[in-house]
Image (cartoon, rainbow, N blue to C red; front, top):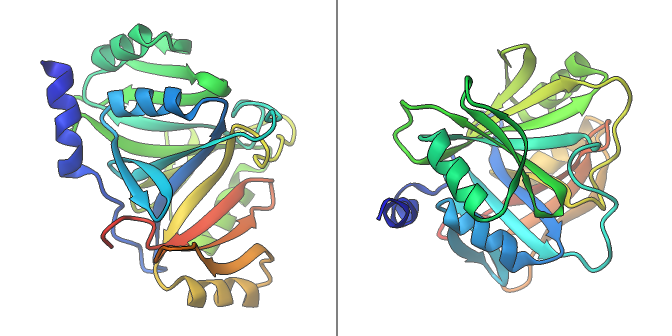
Length: 259
């Protein structure tokens, strides 16, 4: 019964946050995987609601969308070892989430009962962190994208300037706060692999007035990997760029259904 109530709660709270002054909010995480149905079952079991933007299927959680696509060829690796080491959620109950994941045969890279935090190793070697916050009003809430780089402060400054993020910290990690969550920066001993071509292929930000935003980026000397375009049979517009450390980033407008 508890699991059923958890799942039924999802449509009530799932949405992308209102943007910051730069027009940016957390958007999505895009995974390229061997079996999309396996990932869909895991995420819906954690409360995700299935939605669509045109022909694109979205797994909607509070603060973020998870998008899974079938990998046409073998990926070059999981999230660990790339610039995006993992992404994380806050959960109402660490014990409940851990039990659900264990029942689904998900393994754990780390499990700290004292801090009530677990790093789950999803299929295709995608690391997802879950940390308990007993004061949380929702069963689950998106929290962070964790970037691994030797240049923590330089990377944070780039995200602050590029996306209008607010500077902060999470524990020992410099952070860039963006509505819907934050981007944290972990100290790496050496440059990590780019995300493109890995199972966690890219991260995404939702942008208000994407065409105007892209013009400002290009005027600031930021090169786009692909220009503004609209998805077929959809009101969703997209563009791609890569941060200086190799993180592929998709910018979207109207990704959220009904926006």
